Length: 199
Image 1 (cartoon, rainbow, N blue to C red):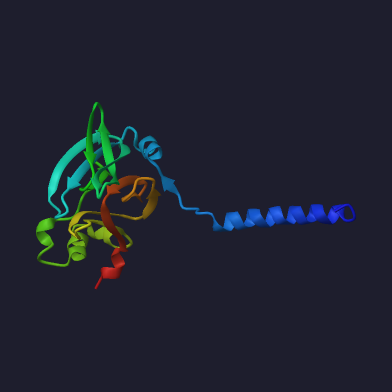
Image 2 (cartoon, rainbow, N blue to C red):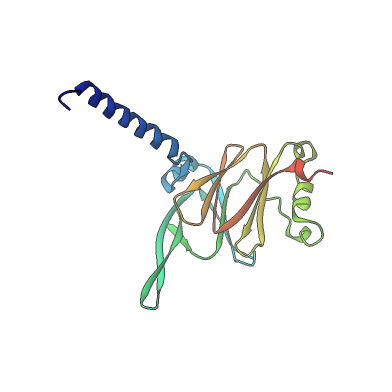
């Protein structure tokens, strides 16, 4: 080290720089919505929050001012060990609702649910959804379809842009549709271009 101090310093600078580049290239750069960010970005916006059974039956519907959602862990004892699962806590003013096994869909009141369950048995679900989009909006739109873990469709809407984000709550997803945020807990989803299904 005494014979080549400049070389040693250069080596450490190079090693540090190479390590920094490696971390930057391998870091997860996905945008994440945690409960605080979701609350801050939906404050003052009227939301509808629907809860569904695994079979797709509507259990409850409530309205809130923004999405104030928290998460807690509940569980049971199985074989002498604790089995934990995330439970979503929907805070609505002084009231709250805890949900663990049901599908929750929360969307702004300005967004329409265009899934007509009565049509789903007659035609393919996507064709039914597209038929409820105004003709002038059909070309170039994206369809968001949400299903329960039991594969039952429960919600669908459309917009020009649709994007999904990571969430810090297990089994949940945050979507941005034309600038509006939607929250889904224990649901499967698809985002499709309408033009894929055009004749």
